[in-house]
Image (cartoon, rainbow, N blue to C red; front, side):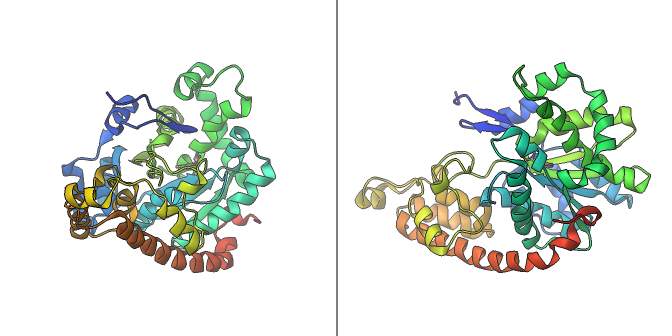
Length: 373
Ligand code: TRP
């Protein structure tokens, strides 16, 4: 029996049983048939091949429409509550692949309102953090002519008419059942889901005709999009389709990288020295002594260092399998493995940090409706 776990848009705790979660939420597995179908559009992303993006709602329908020549719009987002870490970047990297593969427009929502309502932060904090987080998003190379960043507190005029229609269709008892609100929840929190739903319907409003929307994101956001899909037909909007990923693990062996443990979290602005220190302290599947590990081998299954190779830093399946074999046989020890991962992360961050600087030049042009940052 797995331990109790909890996954909501605002809280993720415990050992997550992803199959059970999928059943509880009622989402559909990404099976071999769907993966086979994807192959015709280009090389399949490792996050799909490895089951990191593992669940969906109506993704097949997005492909049906695409095949008929009906292009979809991509939508994902970020709640700007702190600095960007690798766990946040993971689904964005995948979104970039979708944009490149299907050549589609992208909307990125930054919910500074949400983080103000749900965290002990000022609106000034969350709006400033949105700017910092947006630099990381842009640095990943989204097509600047085809990508717009929505900042809720600035673009509310465009979101509000849609959010109102959504809000009128969701009653308090549904919101309570889906999100677990209590009588002490502030009333902004209760309304908020209608704001996260709005960008899913915005492309249809803007085009004046039904535009399919695909939302690739962490499965913790599903409660929002379940509610959003439920109200869509009554508002004459197409139901948004979703692709869901597992949470990126923490370096401490936890199921989710989280700013609550700074030492187990790699930020995009970390120095090479900080990365070395954090990876050096990571939870591994190693044995207590070198002798024992040479004899019995390590366990990549539970190892955070291996997981980081699996999730993001070793894209070559053959090399990944070789690493697992060398670990299990006791040939490679944790020290060496940590050094290799540190190098990979630092190479990635060096490049990312340069692009993050360049992003400052174009961030203005990517603001939805040209708002001022
Ligand atoms: N609520 C999300 C968060 O806290 C931010 C967000 C807004 C989002 N719209 C989204 C995430 C769409 C994924 C997809 O991070």
